[in-house]
Image 1 (cartoon, rainbow, N blue to C red):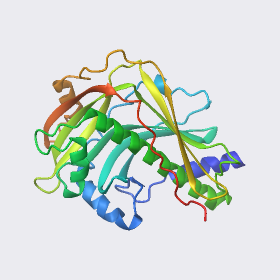
Image 2 (image 1 turned 90 degrees about the vertical axis):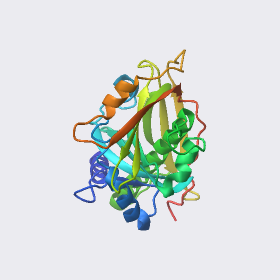
Image 3 (image 1 turned 30 degrees about the horizontal axis):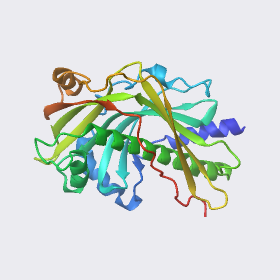
Image 4 (image 1 turned 45 degrees about the horizontal axis):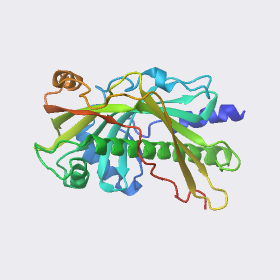
Length: 301
């Protein structure tokens, strides 16, 4: 019976709230949600439909802790990073749950988008480009690795909160650290990662969107990152842990992951005429990144 309830919780948690554009809202004040959704909507047709299949090969997602993974599902989210609270980051991602243990989920990001010349995103863009604005402002691959790392953890945290809310509502229980196994959301990425960046005009004339596709530079080299969550019984606060399992290492991680033409082909769509230019970010080590603790929220009062 409890297994059936876990499955129902997972199904309810993935139901859309609206029939149309309805991304998962991550780390966002609900009162500001309409503002962020309206801001990001002109670029929602860019990137998600063009998103490639998993960046690392499927073999990187093999996990013996689950005997029966469900199908991959496509979704999108608007993420608010705590260092850039006014800039909505729009991501496309895919996810799947373990059918035999609903507290295990895997996901991977297919693209990350933001509005380059939106004043609300100027701090993010300046950080990513090391203070350079305009045509010369190339994104720093190391900064991009860090941003992607944080967005993955913030997304995993939101997925846990959503699952735990359903568990409390339908089962009158919560995922305390001393009673249950942690809720785990894992993903894989290339130990050496590059990126294909497209610059688009969208919405109001003069608005420029940046759409970023990650690209594993070595198909056989990947690491697995697991974000685990539970609730401390004594304080009721969220506990966040992260583990990184390193796989093969790329011996040389400096080359471009693709040619400019290949990058253009990733973005090119006959229905889209707003692509201005593309740039390729060179491969850089992507797995040796310091843990950021996104725990501490008061979940149980």
